[in-house]
Length: 420
Image (tube, rainbow, N blue to C red; front, side, top):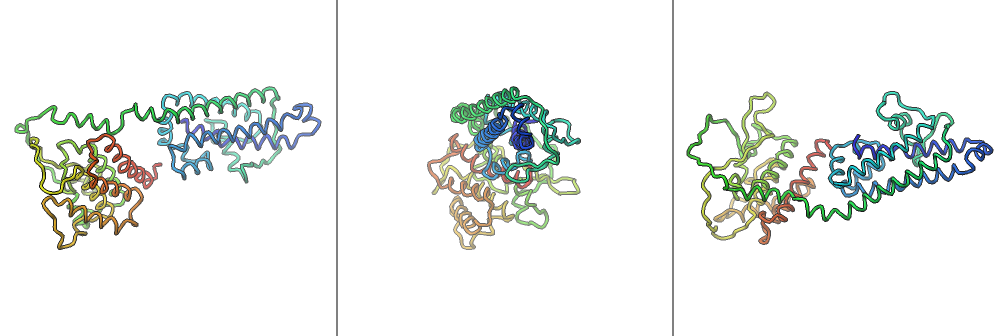
C-alpha cells in the first residue's frame, strides 16, 4: 500500500473509531463508567477528535500543491476513494517530499498501527472479503457515515482497553501528527532550493543539444534497405475521409508532437520552419487501423549544417513555436490551416507573418470551442513567436514552454483516458 493510500485509509477510519467510542460511552452505566474510566473517556474521545482534525489539516497542506482544487476536495470527502490509490498521486507525493518521504511513510504506518491497536479492542464487524488490512475490512463492513461523519451500529459497541493504554496511544498519535506537520512545513520551505538544485527538463534538453554535431556521421555510406510506405499529417488532415483521427488520436498526437518538437528543436532533425508535412506515419498491416498513429516520425533531410544566413524581412527566433501552435489548432479541429486562409492573403517572403495572422484569427474565432489545455498551449505558442526577447535556447524560456504547453496537454489527455 502506497504512502498516499495508507494516509487516506487512516483518514477514513478515524471517524469510524470516534463514532464507535462515542457509542460505547453513551451505553455505559454511570457507575461502571466512573469505576473504569473515572470520567476520562469523554476527554479521550475529544482528544481523538482533535487529532482527526489536526491530521486532516496536515494532509490538506501536504496535498494542495500536487492536486487541483477539485481533486483535493474529492480526496478529503472520499478518503477511501480512487484518487488515494492513483499511482500518479503517489509519485507526485514522493517527488514533493523527496528525502523526507521515507520518514513520512514510517510515520503514517505508525499512525496506522495506533488505530489498528484501538480498533482491535472494539468489537466492530469486519468485511470477510478483505484480509490484507484490518482497518480496511472494518471500513467496508460499515459503509459510509450517515451524516456529519457519524456512523450507526446495529448493536451496542464494546471496548476492552484500559485508560492507561488509551492515554499512551493518544500521546503517540499526537507526536506522530506533529511529525507529519513538521515534514510538511519543512518540505514547503525546501521546495525553492530543490527546484534550483535539481536539473530541470530544459537543462537536460540543453545538454543533449550541446552534443549537436559532436559525432559527425558520413552520409555517403548510408542507403535504404527498402522504402516503407508512409503518409504525412498534412495528407491525413487534407483528406479526412481516408484516415480518420479520433479524439483520442488527436490528443495523443498533440502531446507526442509538442514534447518531441521541444526536445528536438535545436537538433538537425527539426528545422525552424517545420510543419505538418514533416510529421510522418508508417502504414501497418493491422486490420484495425491503416497507419501507426502512436509512433509518428519527423522527416528531415540530413544535410551538412549551413552557414549563418540571415533571412530577409521579418525574423523571429521562435518560428518553431508558431509551427507548433498551428499544428495544435489543426489537430484539435481536424483540418488544415490552409482552409482558414483568405484567398487574397499576401504570404510574403518567409510566410511566417501570414501564418501568424491566419492562426491568430482562427484561434480568436474558435477560442470558446477549444479545451482549456489546448487554449493555453496555443496561446503560449502564438505569444512567444511574437516575443523578440524570448528564445528556446534559453533554459528558463524552454522550461516555461514545457510547463505551459506539454504538461497541461498531458494532464488533459490523462483525464480524457480516465487514467488519473
